Image (cartoon, rainbow, N blue to C red; front, side, top):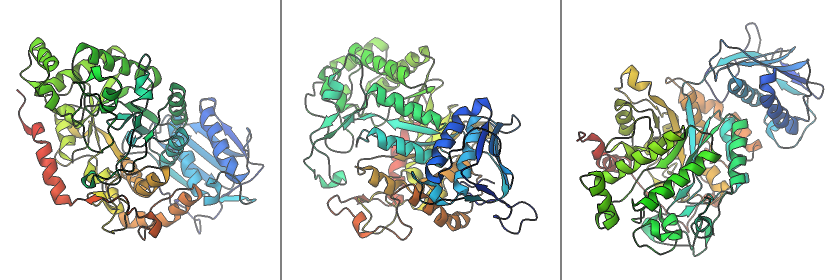
Length: 542
């Protein structure tokens, strides 16, 4: 079965899924093969808190094992009165089987402390399952609004509960720089703090007048990486360059073109970008080196999106670079710049990960593309021979409004309902089999201009992330009616996990944000805009 909101498949002859099931109780033991010690430790910790069952080592209850005949992330889960057996093609597969086991327990088992004495019944049955895509990701923007480490770890837990395996961490932007870089203390003493934040959509030009900021120490980031790895999630870091760099330029004006003001308070895109002189390029290499030192991910994100060329057109440094490299004009600077970053990362044994703007002018060989500007860039990347992660804003931008209800908090973007997200298909029509194989999977993006707290993130993300998770795990012929029928039981799990999800009935009175008005968009208008934005991807290469 391919359902993340699990409905158990009864054993033949059972009168109901619960017939002949297993009872989890204080005496239950957990036996695991040595390579699965990490999964066993995690399962003891996560089940023991809510059930009061410590699951000491030994026979007589739950057994974890490996099966090389299963796909790497696949698992088999068998439950009968004698016990529970979870086997996987790897430790990750066993972990996903254990997450399914958690779903089969009563929601109370998901709490952080015991609220009942048990025993805890698990219905009998057998599930054999594996994901359709190898990249099942979620991007979390901690630059626009800083999220404390504890909230990031909680977000990792919720993503892992839904069998997602990539956390793309957007660490810097015009509105804030969130990481330490050796020898660059002003990045965190200046670049991590802005004087104010916009209230609502930038179209209203309203501000709250409150400073905002924060940053992660190296130890913080090591903790996030290790915590995610224990849950079989890879953290892919992103430092946006050469655009979305006003926070860095505010800290070190010599990296820019003369700007000496504060970190940007307004949302949107700043015209203040990196110059392309030797010092700026050395700065970027140092940043990438530090990311490589902290994050073991093969992919390192460099952004590459929404970089205005206004300053370059007037910059002596830029024109000197254009002449030195034999470029035609400022529009060729970014492809050249991106190629330098890719070369540096390759020397560190890493690969470049960037938004689909890097396709314009030709993305470096081996680069992986995050295709966000509608569906077309996914096809463009695959046809150009690049591995690609589909994350079109019109399907998986979870900051976008969830309905036309005027009480939706800060409604921006096009309407993106639960059904819309569930219908997301990462592989566009018209690709050959070879091209389709380059689509690694999909990613939901959580931009936080209007999400100033974990509570607001919860509201925008859930239950739409549940729908997304099933879309990138299950087959293409999913049934939204079936998903909807299973959702109420899953919402009870989210209640137990303390998630402030958006109710199916719509926003509650206290969800509204009349102080932070939005700017709703219509889909047809956005699609026309995206067609214009991606025109450079349809031009023949020179």
